[in-house]
Image (cartoon, rainbow, N blue to C red):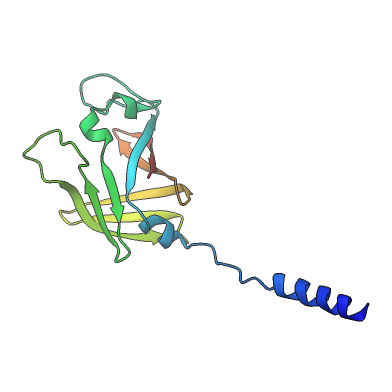
Length: 154
């Protein structure tokens, strides 16, 4: 009976010593793949197109297809690219719409993008997983504060 107990003990020991794979870092999650824009909303409603029509919930569906196929790329070397995707609204536009650098802020709870041509975007991270990125950007205009929500997937 003793050899059976030793065998059982050995098997338990061997199978319980699995190495735990660490969870990916936020940098790993953000830079692993390109992010395709899949949704968005604005609160309160806002005239995003400048034509006198307020949009709020899911303004993304009102955008032309040439905007909805855009890709956001965060590289491990902290470079950022907003790519036009498969279609462009104006064929003369460059394929890379915005280029710049990115960095995490506030204990990796926000992303600051510094554009090459000037300007800064600050995005609060609401969700970052291997398949989903949800962010909020704050816009202040004419004394009103707007929350612009973006959703990305792969």
